Length: 77
Image (tube, rainbow, N blue to C red; front, side):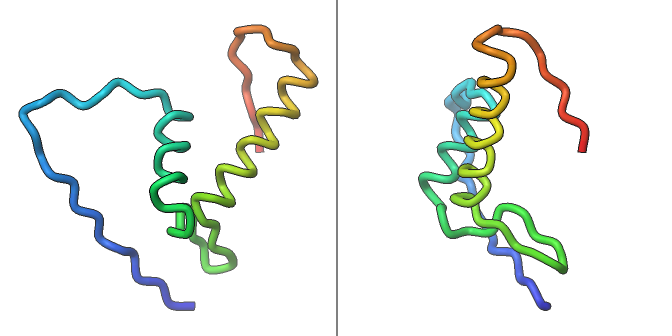
């Protein structure tokens, strides 16, 4: 499988970048580029939309199991 990564050009600005959490960055990227490849291996490619869906499922499962506690969670794969 051949893969060519698209080039994304981000203009530089004198304005500071907004402070966003990783989930906020992920959601924003998925909204802007839902069909772009987020994760690629020789065996599989996952779009930002698919990755966001999987992340939401994992978050819901953790919330069901752990409740709404604001505590760190370790995920071992």
